[in-house]
Structures are given as structure tokens and as C-alpha cells.
Length: 315
Image (cartoon, rainbow, N blue to C red):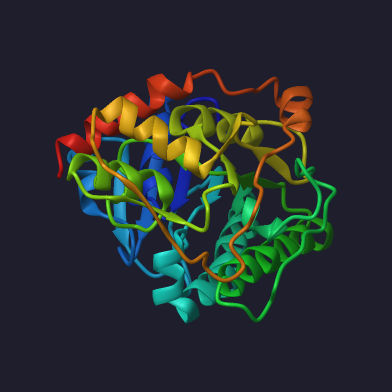
């Protein structure tokens, strides 16, 4: 990369929750950013604050089709994919296609441009884990033909393809396994537990637990997550790295926290547990600590308060 020019980063899924926050970080680091999104689940509202920015360009395009970009590219961040259960259950085939064809095209772009490549993978590659907490060496417990399999297997295939490009073509690749993340710009009705509970509490509706609420999750604030992802891209490692907050809580505890912090009077009700819903989910972040010098810094209550205020302005 020539020293006299700004680095150029391509972000697929650039109008999504994570893609838009990543774009903000890259611009703050002095990058020029080319965001690509077909707006299947992304939103122009997430990037409207970047309109007219001299170092930002948005292209509406489906990355399952060939990606052509003129000029130099230094980094490719592949974030394009439906990422919530509601989205990938509604769009199962596009989810599989973006994991397979989209990853192939994004890797092809990185190979052609001699750019570094980072795949946004997921803790869902561990499925309903039998090992706790989850280390990167764990191969997972995934039902490939269950309703969640379209997302889980798309990401597992994407990881395999990424490592194949690294080993066969020498592409400088990174893989981040993202655990539950929350923050401003999540969609209120995307089916994930953070916007669901906050939206229900702010609207005075009952908070819906699936099962008895004893299943656990760990929640990482988006600013922390993006910092880990940026550090990973700039690192020398090629193996998958978990990025998430190891602070674990039950879904019932989380519901009670949302009621407390919103001041809601919502009752908690129970519904049947969805098929293949993971019972435990907690990252082992030893690798992120040792390889990247990263760990989450934002206190859960501070992050949730910021998220509640974001949704309060939108309900």
C-alpha cells in the first residue's frame, strides 16, 4: 500500500447493524470505505449520516453476483448476510447463497486486489454447544437440516472457503466468530432478544421468554466488538478468533434487567422453545486477549442504557 494514499476498505453488508458501525470505525481510522449492500436486511437509515462524506461510497449490489471494482483495495470485510433468526428463516436460500457465492466473490475480490480479507463468522458455527465456554478449537454441534442450519452451515462453509483461499492462493485471511452483540442501529423487530425485550418493555407489552428462560447468552456492546474486529484485521493471525463478552447471564435475568432499566411494568410470559435453540452460549476469549490484546470494556448497564435510548426514540 502506497504511503501517500489512504487505505481503501470494502465492507459488504455495509448498511447493516455491524457493517455501518464498522464503516464508522474505518473512516475514523483514516480509511476510504466502499460499502456494498443489497438492502435485503440492511437499512439506508444506518448510513444516512455518511451522505456526502468525501471518503465514503455506497454501492447497492447483491454480492452473490460478481463484484467489480476499479482501483486499489487494501481490505475486504465480508459482513453481508441475514443474521437474525427471523431474517434467515424468512430468507433461507439467500442466506445460503451469500454464505457460499457471496463469500466466493468477496474472496475473489481480495485475491484480485491482493487485499487482506476478514470473514464475519458467528458463534452459531458451534450450534447447540456441548462444550462450555466455547473455544475456537471446538468443532460444534450443528443440525445441518434444521431450520437454523441455513445460517449455521452457510457460515461454516464460508469459513472452510476462507481457509481454502488462504492455503491455496495465499490470501491474507482472518475469521472472526461473533457472539451476541447489541447496540444502536439494531432493527426493532429483527427477532433477536435485545431489541425484542427492549421493544416489548418500552411498549408496555409482556416480555416473551422462549422456554423457561434458563438458557444463557453473553452480550457484547457493538463498540467493543468492532474494536476487536479492527484489531483482528490488523493482526498476523489467520485462525478463527472469538470476539464477544464472556459475561454470561440467563435470558430470564436479562429480561429482568430490561424491566428494571426501562422502568417498565411488563409481565414475563413463556412460550415454547424454538427448534435447535442453543442452551448455552459463552465465548472463551483467551485468544483475543493473547493475540489481539482485546477484551470488552463497556459495562453491560452502560451499553444497555445507550441501546434503550436509541429504541426509545424509535418506538
